[in-house]
Length: 295
Image (cartoon, rainbow, N blue to C red; front, side, top):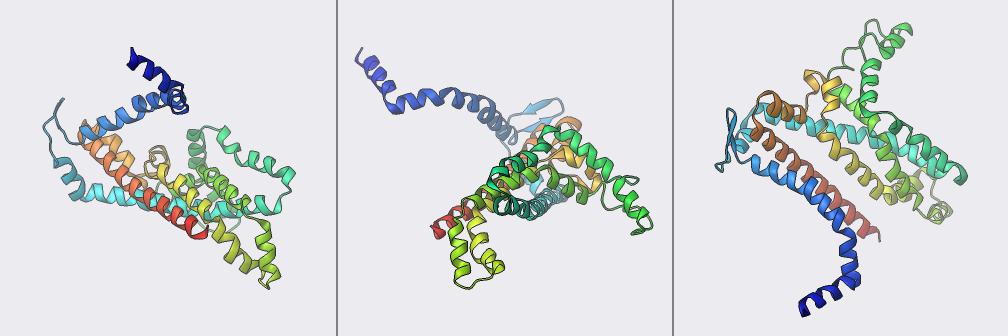
């Protein structure tokens, strides 16, 4: 009886009420995220014997994933494409976020942010298909350049290769980069900029010595938001990448569904998660270090 009474008192405390509040969400996350992830990790240490799975613990899959040139090449290509997408997206997103933050009237900033989110109204799959049409051999890009006399024959390097994947993903994830950079720029105290100019700094040097350093946390957050999902993207390489734009997610799909080797597919998935997690952790630590140094 005393234990029951103590448990009831614990639930009536602030900590107990908070635990009750997050319990459904925590249970949901455990069932739909932690449990499948644990299954994938366990599966990566097993082997496939035709239609059955040998549950004997082995590191053979990891050994093959690390030594096979094909897997290494796809993983490196995935990381390279993801980093390229991140760099292009952030470089294109920063001027837009800067313009909205510093050159748009406060009463119209919400309208600009609303316009930036318009691409989310359309299905991601439809947007990828549209880029496939735009970059096609006989698409608008090649047709316009030929019509203007800029080129004599259609460009072959803008579709069915890694370039097409970078272009498509950079467009798809642009809003994810613009918004955190905008928030970081909005937090900058404008008096700092005025003080820098009063001390004789030009607008350009004020940007590089005041605005940009204070916006670094937003830039790093944007890079993190863009990089994590693009490493494991499957749809875009499948539709516009061709053989030159195939990424590790396409190989994971092939291993599980085409080659019926689920343990190897799980191994490649775990390897991708480790690489992405390492890069993400490095960015998070860099952001925290930068924030502490500036505080």
